[in-house]
Image 1 (tube, rainbow, N blue to C red):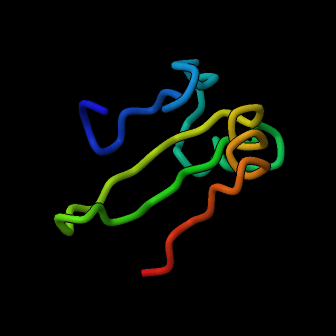
Image 2 (tube, rainbow, N blue to C red; image 1 turned 90 degrees about the vertical axis):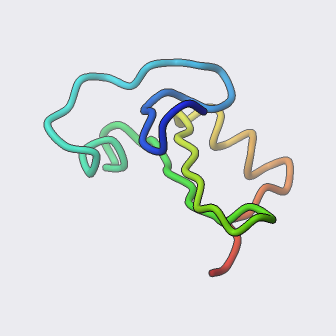
Length: 67
């Protein structure tokens, strides 16, 4: 991912629908998910996922790391 807040799905590359704020993307209407975690070097990373990819990610055992 090029920028910390690059708003495209990390898995499929889909661009999100136009919204006024990032909070709108994670609403029930749009269903996008933002995963925030620290890598092994301690850098905070962000991953946006569209609803379909989020479902597959969770079904495959993906989990949000506890900070």
